[in-house]
Amino acid sequence: MVRSFFPWHFNIRQKVIMGLTAGILAIGFIGIVSYYYLRVIELKQHLVEVADDLSNIMLEIRRYEKNYLLYGSAEDLTENQRYIQLGLNVLEKLEPEVMGFKGAPQVSLIRQHFSDYHKLMKKITTNGTGLNHSSRRELEEQLRELGKQLVELSHQLVKIERERILEIIMTLKTQLVTAIFIFLLLGGFLSFVVSRKILQPLRVIEKTTLRIAMGNFNPLEVLDTRDETQRVVEAFNRMVAELEKRQDQLVQAKKLSSLGVLTSGVAHQLNNPLNNISTSCQILMEELDTKNFEFFKKMLTNIEQEVDRARDIVKGLLEFSRSREFTLKPTYLKEVVDRSIRLISSQVPAGIEIVEHVPDDLVLHLDAHRMQEAFLNLFMNGLQAIETLPGQIKVEARLDKEIRRVVITVTDTGKGISKKDLGRIFDPFFTTKEVGAGTGLGLSIVYGIIEKHQGTITAESKEGEGTRFIIRLPCKPIAPDEGPLA
Image (cartoon, rainbow, N blue to C red):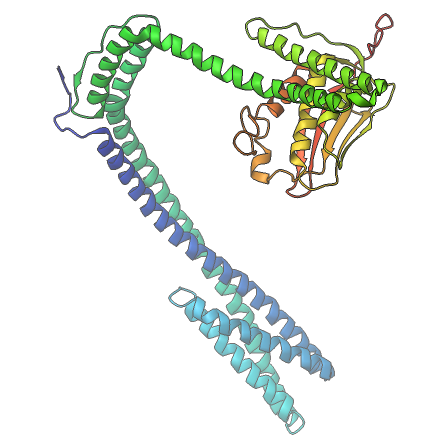
């Protein structure tokens, strides 16, 4: 055993909790102080805005005061009184908010001057006709002086609060610099502790894991850390000993696991053609007495197509160990879509129709077999999504010359996909169906096929409104010596 460098012994959980607690307390304290100062700045900024508003209100009061004293207009007097009342209302709401602030006495003084101004204006307007010229002139002078003082007081209030805001900002900056320094010290100390007590043992385990992967099963040296690291290393050494004994069994188990996953996917794909063959055979047996040879021919053709489809699926199983060459050839898109519709037609329930609008002359560089598989998976997905009849699956294609791409849409009238699931539908093994109703491989296969064609596929859906898959494939010019394949 190698003795630990540190005289105290805490396990990793305690070390992490202590470090997180110290950090959280420090952050919480700084956060509370910063929030307090920011709140004060916010209130003071509000006070400055109100002071500016009061200054503007006072200017309006003075303007209408001047017009009234010059022309005696009743309309100017009304506006003057309205602005006075507006200023008083603002000050009444403001006074409780600024309690304890440096500008509170200034606000009270402004409110007192506003009241005095209001009373003096009422005195002039009420007793104006009964006053001699000298008395009226004296009152008007007092009114002008009060108005001037109000404007000056509002400006002083703005100045005082702005200076206070700057003081708070400087204090906040000092505190933040101090906090950063403390955090750097705390971070340096925690980094040292974490490096020596946690990361160093974990690096040893990591290196040993890589060594074991290369076939070297020598055990680790156990450090006397008296924490989870020591127990992990001891358990790791026991695991290494077991790995050395059971290596062959684990390899075999891995092969069986891979085979199980592969068989699940193949069984899911083989189920459809086998069901179609079984259904066609039952129909033929029921219709033998009718001697409708044209119908018999049609059923046998369907059986042959499904057998070919099953053969292709089995061929895909053989490609598990060797990849089939992916070949792009000029192909009529309509032929691929029509062939896919024919193959799926025996599985389309009554009340559901597949509508196709694909231009006859639209030629793309495709691997027809794989693109057909993509359409079949999309059709099957749409059929399984339609729960309420009648229903429809619509396939449309058009050439977008601006982006030089062919846009293909496959739209169904099914139950749709929820917003939380829409971003995951192309993930392997993700399915919203019930257990046993699907493996979640279909749309993942479609995504891979479209990606191989250097295209993109997206989905648009709302619950209860169906789903639309949008495929965009590159449109490349066809060389003169290339002929489209049917």
